[in-house]
Length: 557
Image 1 (cartoon, rainbow, N blue to C red):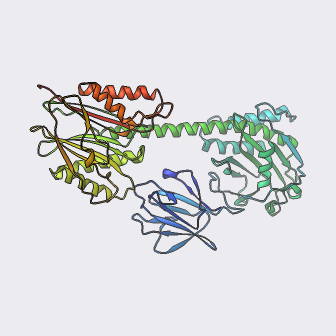
Image 2: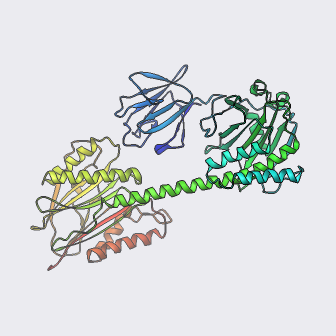
């Protein structure tokens, strides 16, 4: 089946089968292929299945679609095997996965590797060698001198090789020194989806063909039966009759051995061949190849772990930097407002998150407190949180009407067509009158603890849709008096939806009970709630961000 393979972006490494007659690429969740990148249009491009293959069309996207680095003009354009498709900075390669299709993942050499042929039942392999899954389980009869020389050569070649891109060519370089008759060699490794993917190739002579054509039967036999195989004259070997290329390219001798990881599981194959009748491999060569393949498998497994470790370290470093950047959007200190005390808490589920809180002094001297929750978490939510922070400040600076400020904010965020929404709670304190104004855009209403100890939800009936869903929503403000000794508690759903080992939620009722039962200072109440959530979770990893803001009006300040 034809497919797109993502080279970077949020889908990096994924193979997306083109299973429908029409496949839409875009940012919208309604798209067949969703690309969560702000620069990508909601419906950016589409791929069409036609009688003679596949075609692509740009859907009047804002940032254009590119085919092999050329901007697509109006109309439909034919896709060919290996084509590069770019929507903004997100790159895909198109592959028509027909028998004989070129590999999409060959990293090294000018040679391409072409798998072809089907399995056949009859075998006349000239020689084969069982390869055990355990290290040292292979009994070899080749001369110790030859084996030692081969192992020393590959050890020398791999001495300074750490990454996979260093190890693979080093293995082939060593092979060519060990087997002077070899003309070509390649390494293929298992991909994430379990398919065998050519990764590196090498040719001794400049006049070698540009393409190595390989029978699928050979590599399948090697992997399935855990056998290294030798064909003394591949052109006459009935096992490989399905591979026309053996005759086409006059391969006179071929050896192929499996590669195993530390656990004894096959991770790929190593193959070497000659192109001349007078340069044949023998059984001793096959044994030496198995020795080399054993060391190569260990080195490749180590290199993959090394590369994964580096990749994880790079990701962690980027996330740590992103967390520091995000922290810059949050308040670095609590307000100093006469007669009031404040407490706040913020914790992302994974380095960075989509929860947001802020304190803003308005032009009229009032204090605005914001608590918001961007749907989802992670990088995308954090980026939207940063945008929300900037837009909130802009809208509150533009008008003293708090309801109108939220209306303006919603229209600006909706106009960005981000396909994400934000629950948003705004509380504005007038320090002179102690009147509080609340605007609620789809967020949980704050808890108001009165002087008599009763607790209610402030302005719950005035809550409207979250920000970012639709334009021109008429948000309303609710006003009430915060008297001495009274408090307000605002939070995001990471607290009430925290789970224990039985997947039971902490719940809004538990938060309300804590507020009712204790007449605490703002910081004590905040810590009491957080400790209760922590005790409920009992070590369970939480999947959502947490944010809490507590406000107390002091008695006789």
